[in-house]
Length: 182
Image (cartoon, rainbow, N blue to C red; front, side):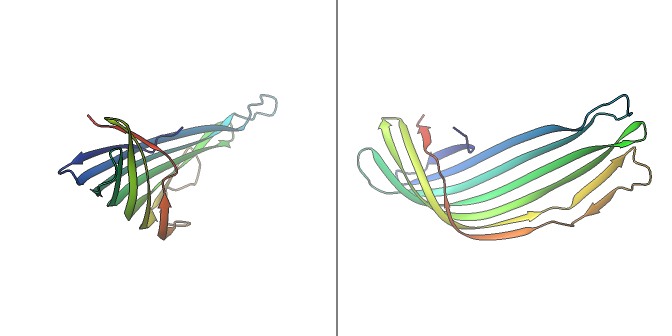
């Protein structure tokens, strides 16, 4: 079970709905890259990785007459996203620990045409899913590298290994959506 964000939908008429999806995600991992050993004067070293993702997806839906419980629709959705990453790597500098910190991120922008349906299992409770076709662009931002307690190292900014991606094609949400009307 996963949550792909929270969506809110508001009907301006019986057949037109405005919607917005919001996603906010965090991830942090820590890995020990060297064990401490007092006999060989080795210090414990770690690598820490973190990421934050923010996404906003406004859109519009046009609903059609289905059955009493089925509500098919088509629509359009704009996707705006921003991701931040950070990586801290420790290294042994004699008898102390030095740290290299790399911070970067990406910007996402897309537009999708969607088609889906909601099936009302009760008066105000529905299950739904949708498919879509769209365009999307992802562009990596400048990486900033800083050093702490590493002799001779200088802070820098770089676009080395950055990528820009442009995608056109289908996008399928491989999940059932559970919603309720309030």
